[in-house]
Image 1 (cartoon, helix red, strand yellow):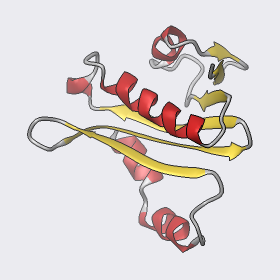
Image 2: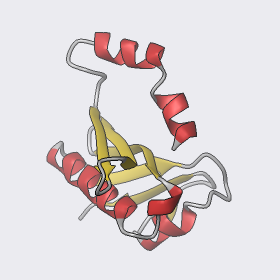
Image 3: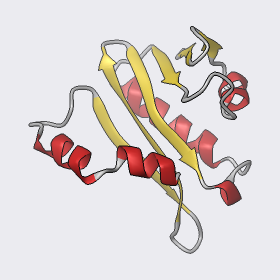
Length: 123
């Protein structure tokens, strides 16, 4: 999550996104999951940059909160937002071909378009 935050939440990037009137095209924002004490345990971001195609830009869960349904819940919430904006398909690009998240996405119905790009229909 720290890597994700350092790359995606850098001040210059946030400033650029804020200064785009109406937000970035297709950007649906961040979803945040917190634990009982209020600490952030997971984040997801996504959008619908192309009509009909939802894109998961980021999904990360703190190591101590993994395998507790946090990632699944965040993806489900992001998916519902994307459907609300007309997405009929959902895609994700993973940082590496042998990314540890592959089993998670495969279990949720994603299939490989390429070694790092995965997709699933949203019925």
